[in-house]
Amino acid sequence: MEDFNEKNVAMTIKMTKLNVNAKPFVPTYAGKPILENNIENAPDDWESMDQDKNIIRSVLKEDNGAGGGGVNLINHFEEDMADIKINSNVASVNNDNHSDGDYIESHVNLAADELNDFKKPLKSNLHDEIYKENVNIVFIGHVDAGKSTIGGQLMNLTGAIDKRTLEKYEREAKEKSRENWYLSWALDTNQEERDKGKTVEVGRAYFETPTKKFVILDAPGHKCYVPNMISGTTQADIAVLVISARKGEFETGFEKGGQTQEHAMLAKTIGVRHLIVLINKMDDPTVKWDHERYKECKEKLLPFLKKVGFNPKTDLHFMPVSGLQGTFLKYLPDKSCPALAWYSGPSFLDYLETFPPFQRMFDGPLRIPIIDRYRDMGTLVLGKIESGTVYKGQTIYLMPNKNLVEVLQMWSDEVEIKKAVNGENIKLKLKGVEEEDVCPGFVLCDILHPCRTGKLFDVQIVILELKSIICPGFSAILHVHTLIEEVTVKILICLIDKKTGQKGAIRPRFVKQDQAAIIRLESIGTICLETFKDFPRMGRITLRDEGKTIAIGKILKILE
Image 1 (cartoon, rainbow, N blue to C red):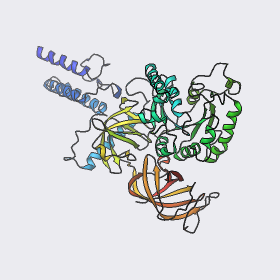
Image 2 (cartoon, rainbow, N blue to C red; image 1 turned 180 degrees about the horizontal axis):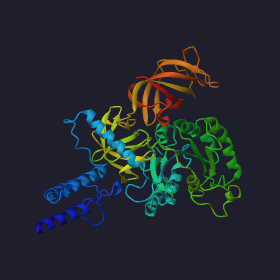
Image 3 (cartoon, rainbow, N blue to C red; image 1 turned 90 degrees about the vertical axis):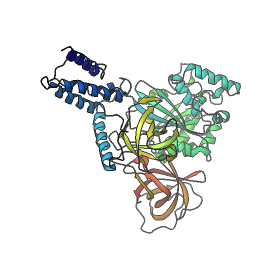
Image 4 (cartoon, rainbow, N blue to C red; image 1 turned 45 degrees about the vertical axis):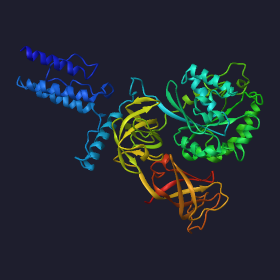
């Protein structure tokens, strides 16, 4: 009898370990399952859980003769384990002993169960806080407009960077006679960018407000780094066009040869719908918050932005700011600021808070175009979830090579998470692929609905700026989602009337500037593609040649 009581005590201890919030165990065999079906409270050490399960199983089987109640309790335990172990390690699957069909089917069923679980109210993976919407903001504009400075000031005002680090940057900048650059160093992290005062790679930082979590994407403004700017803008939900109001700088950036026009056009082409125009450096001695200078900049920009496709009523918002002083970024200035006499709108952060939630494809097939990859105790990749949801422990495809990979770990803003949804920028640690076998432009996707691949496809384009003509055999650089690939024109299918949209009946011999056409392109290798109809953000293309954007368009059909 004493031996039986000791076993009951041991079983009670083992069962209560599974949930720190569990009530004391009462051996009512006809009761409901003991474990709560709550993935948030599940422990990470699944191996120890398996050991506990085996111990309890042996104890209950020994006691099975007393009324047979132990068998029912084992069944309850197995059901709870099946529910709670959604994100357990799937590495135990042996490809040598299972066919690919069985392997894929098992994980498709698992993904369906996870999707049902996701439809519950969203909460943070590591805390019991309400889920905050993730919003990606890209800062674009001509070089030296103040993009990095505004990004650094936002981090300062929201507490995303500590005071000691900022003071360190200020001392280092002063030593190099660059006192006004210290805020930009929060985003320009490498020595080349700090020495030249020019952003080369897309800087990335994070800050939060009471209702949203923002990702800052600091795009380079120099014309030599437009491909990097395109890569950053493909991740954005909102674009912020930064304009310098300083005398001479606005004209240099906006007129021919500057990057203001090209950046705004590329943002619209890539699919960014909302554009906030920050007219910066209003505190400069050549401006002094002059209303006339503000109106001059706005009146010159507005016709061009309307021509690009932005609706002034719904897609555009103008505001004056000072990135260096932080004026109108988080707080409105005091009454001494001359701008209060003519600007009565909200601050930049207050305006961002007014945006309604973005429409996200949470239930869509998973799509994560890879931005970058590197090795650090395994293969790590960076990307934005364009559709669907991804879980820790999930097995997915890496296209176009169709590699089965497992998600070992995930991070968002350097915080480890177990689940990420459409719109989030994440870092993933993958099992089943080496770092040298992954390239930017590859796509992580569902096993059930993989991303389409091909090397021959039809596109509809508009020729923007081209001194020569486009004919079969013409080569250019294709930008689509995060992919950069050389393509060749195979066939000119037809011209399109830009006013009526009608297709011409005669196949053209060439296409020139300001014409619209449907053409067939061929890439050197197989690439990941989606049609504009199925995935608009992954179906928009840009063609560049000799450092200039020559055409924009969309993918109509993927042939092979």
